[in-house]
Image 1 (cartoon, rainbow, N blue to C red):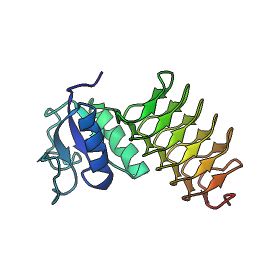
Image 2 (cartoon, rainbow, N blue to C red):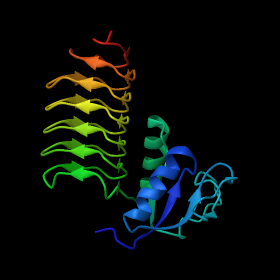
Image 3 (cartoon, one colour):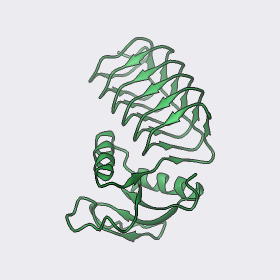
Length: 205
């Protein structure tokens, strides 16, 4: 249980606001935020701690952090950096998501409102399952994957590290998508996709 744990939000704009709200709804206590620059818009009235990359950053302020960073590569890099400092990177699971008790979710991952994760799916570290996305039974998402709003992965899909699957895309059951891929919004994936590919369309090419 993560109720009432004090935590620091890393990244305080766009996606960070969404993660911050979900954290509050999940009874985490947001104490402050880290970012390169102090935010002009501070909706949660958080204290600014500076950048976690600064040599002067005080790692003793809190033990727990959550990731408000949408960019896959940057999110993984910062998450791994925080872990290297001996600090926790918490999962954030929106209370209006539906998550099977028989799935697993890695540290630092974010499950947004309306998302559905079904039985025996494996969500790796520092992934994003965004608003209304569906990850069906026995799918495997490796580290740093982002499933955008409304995307659907049918059963037994494998998605490689740091791949982005665009909004409202559909991936047929049993498909394997490589690492560092970009799947354009609204695409339909009916065959395996090799590492480093950029594909889009119906069917995706």
